[in-house]
Length: 384
Ligand code: GLA
Image (tube, rainbow, N blue to C red):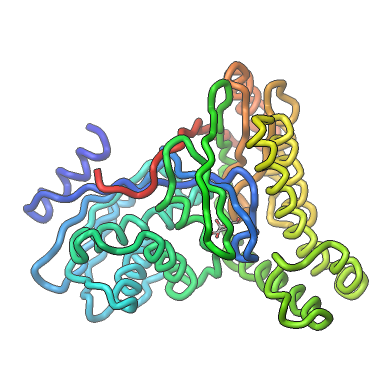
């Protein structure tokens, strides 16, 4: 029995009603990492790994959530929403944000499960948040809620409920994705454009390091603070016209941060250069030049590993192995870091060789088996 059917049947058995089904995808990011909270650019897309939610209203003010994959249940009341430090926080946080935003909320039944590997860096948490947002929109707000508002509420769930100071990329990509397109997103203005991704002859393949990002949230918040500290140093010279690293150039960093604060310099230089790489990569993509695009991906990994220091030995190993395979255009760690997956751009005719090499070599180097996922790009969160 497939997942959607299982969710539907579990919901009906448990709540004695027919659910609405929602598909909320995970995301990949081709390039532009740790740039979103610095008001820079990102290039993500929603993928065919998703969280599926069977949802329905209740006549009382109870919240009843079932995590199918974990076989766990949360039960509580709308009037006593409090952090649990469990998966339930992604759902509770969204209910809370909806209410704080003045939108309608009500009792809610949810049974959910998914095909996004948890901790794989494909943003299962953003997918859950978006799924609950679309549920509340559909059940209690007549499908009238602005999608961008729901994206922002998802980021607020992370920032204010869960306690990770993450940017807006994950929720944006999962909610706004479009099949066969990547999203060129300016995280300062939130202006965006869809760029068709011609996948004739190439594949996007994720390789899972199998490392769960335990350090991720504390180190993530530290990186963000380091970037802000760098911005303050430049502000001291240039004034308030410098709002974020988006306004900072390499000559500024060379003049005012390099000698004074070498560690902050490395962090900030990575972000400034990653934005430059993204601009170059987008130009290459527009020109159909995936070879050049891939080189920018390698550059991104180098920066993430050596300057921004958010990679780990297993991710570096995956990239090093990928480099040796003919037909691999580019490879880099993806997402927040400290584990999760690498994203690889691989010629279709090299896919078998790539798969075999990655599996054999990663096992030989680490004693652990990598898992590979070939991604298709699909629509953002939607009712199915
Ligand atoms: C995580 C965050 C995003 C983004 C990436 C790094 O996925 O949730 O906002 O900062 O890390 O690019």
